[in-house]
Image (cartoon, rainbow, N blue to C red; front, side, top):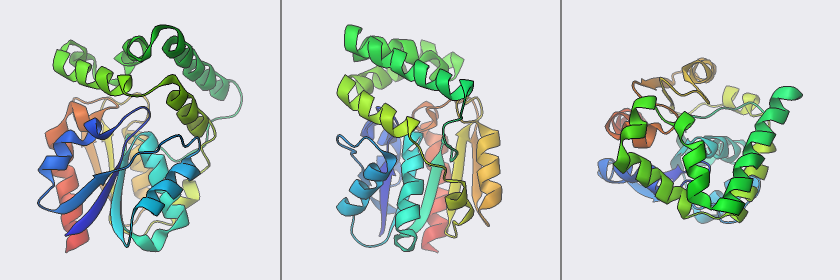
Length: 238
């Protein structure tokens, strides 16, 4: 059975992958990575590699997708297939755009420190999901509870990792294993165009655009994401 490692995004945990953990259990032996206190994408990648033996398939959501690329940078021969979901491969922009990103991330951290992780999540969540889903109390509470399991210290470490993200364009262009590029159709952070560009760089890759979904596609439209992952895993195991 295929070994599959799933990598959560910023302030996320296994809850992101709840549907996939059960929906793909017949195809793969699945584990979800924990980055611990790591404050760089490289350190996160090294932690995953150290916790995993032999070859494996790996998929990452958001920040986790960037960790996937750092894993591939370090150990391409161990990666049987990879998935990049709601993510990107380019470094933080220089100048005003990058400064705005950093300021926004640190403003959220200040809310977490002064008012708690749930208050931070309530501020951050609306642009993260499809507008129609903010009225889905079950989904919203599941995401807020996930953020609440983290701490401002972990948030600060992961901010450092994201702001220091390396340029991984050449890594994407070097990929030669079965690959799935997946984005929410309404993802305002890392949308379909970003994933179409990456897919064009990877020969034979699959591109899945999930309708009625924002940045949290594995939780917003879990059945569609699981179906796309099933097609990808079937390609790996052929």
